[in-house]
Length: 141
Image (cartoon, rainbow, N blue to C red):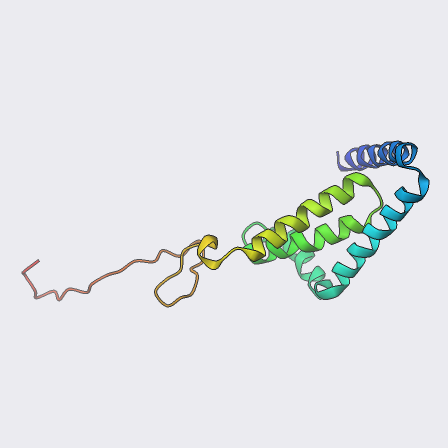
């Protein structure tokens, strides 16, 4: 199924590039491909190149959905990688993932989730409760 999907995406990319070339001309389309590729390379090289192996291992181990921080960083890395690939669809998908990454990064901490009294953000499987310890001898409940 995956090879067929890759072939369909590649065929759609070729059709879109040919149509864009016919509409805009060859030089603007070539410049667009070179600029988006360079942007993807610069973004990837800027700060996240060392995290790629960790994200690949997490994805293969099935931890990507559970670890929100790794999933968040994977948006950046996958978006930059998609910008590296030549094509209109991959560029649009890369820009979409990068926008998700940057919008999520700019949110204030209050919008990202609740915090406990200590100021730390609890993990999803954490239940934050208040409790009072009663003496067993105390009958005035």
